[in-house]
Amino acid sequence: MPPVPAAIVENVPLASLTTLQLGGPARFFLPAADEATVLDGLRWAAERGLAAFVLGSGSNLVVADAGFDGLVIHLQSRGVVHAPAAADLALVQAQAGEPWDAFVADTVTRDLAGLECLSGIPGLTGATPIQNVGAYGQEVADTIRSVRAVDRQTLAIVDLPASACAFGYRDSLFRRQPQRYVVLSVTFGLRPGGAPELRYAELATALAGVARPSLAEVRATVLRLRRSKSMVIDPADPNRRSVGSFFTNPIVAVTDAETLVDRLLATGFISSAGELPRFPTSDGRIKLSAGWLIERAGISKGLRQGAVGVSTRHALALVHHGGGTTAELLALAARVRRAVTDQFGIVLQPEPIFLGDISIAP
Image 1: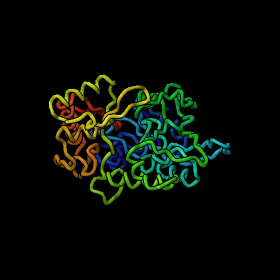
Image 2: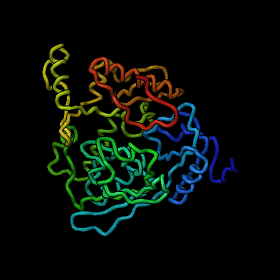
Image 3: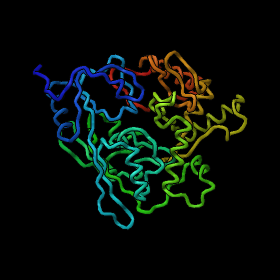
Image 4: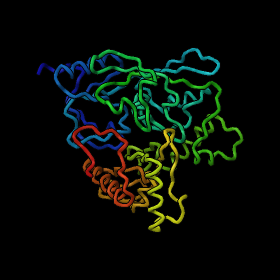
C-alpha cells in the first residue's frame, strides 16, 4: 500500500469520541473541516478498497471492541447561513459539523419555529436527517427542505430535496443506504414568529399553566424534561455514558396492536385496554412504547449487569458505568430484547448505528 498521507493518522482510539466511551480504534483516521477533505478521504479509501465511515459527535454510535478496519472521517465543518426570510418561511443552512443543540438554540433566539422541541439532543446537525431525529412531537423531516451530500458512488456533490430523502420514523434514505451518501449540510425551512409545537402530551401537560408559551419557554421545558430522564449530556450524571434511547418504539399494524391488547387483557396482564400506551401514526399504524414494554417485561430502571446497565431514569437507555466493553453492552441489549420478545412477541430494533463487526444476539 502507498504511504499514508500526513493528514491521515493510524490506529486512533474511538472510545473517547463517543458518548458511550466504548470500542476499539480506527485503522485510519482523518479530521475533516471542509467538503474537500471529506472528498479526499472518500477517494483515498475507495482507491485502496477500504471501508470509510463518517463520524460526528459519536452520540448515537456503538463501536466494536475490535474497532474499525477502515478509514474514519471525523466531520468538523462549521457554519450557519440564513437566507433572506419570506413572510412565512426562513431558509437556514447548517453545516454537517455544526453542534445540533447550539443550532436549535440559535433558531429559538431568532424566533424561528420548527425545531424547539428538538432541544437538548446531543450530536451534530449532519446526523439529524440520517436518523430523522425526533422528540416531543417534532421530527427534523417536518422542516428539512434539502440535504447537500456526497454521492459515494460517483463522488459528486448532490442536493437532495426532502421528497427524495424517504423519511420515516427514525429512518431515511441515508440510514437505509449508509454506503451511498455522506451528509455535508442541511437546509431547514422554519416559521418566523411561528407558534411552538405542543403535540406531545407530556410537553403540553408541563406547559398547561402557560397561556401562550414562547419558543424559549418550550425549549426550557424540553431541556428540563430531558434532564429528568438523563437525556441531556451532563458530566456529573452517572447515566451519562449512553446513546440515549437504545431501541426505537415499535410500530405495528392496528390489528396486531388490538391482538396484543386482547391477549394482555385475557391473561390479566392489564386490567383495561388503556393501560397499554399506543399512539396512531401518520401512516395508519400504531406506535407502542418501548420503555413501557421493557419495564413490564421485568427489566427495571437501574438494573446492573457488570460494567453496564439500564439508566436509573429511563428504561430505554443502556449505560456504561466505566471499565466495560461493547460486548458487555450488547449482551445486556440482547437480554432486554429477549425479555420483551418472550413477554409480548415484539422484537425491539436498535436505534444507534453499529460500527465494526457487531450485532445483537437474537
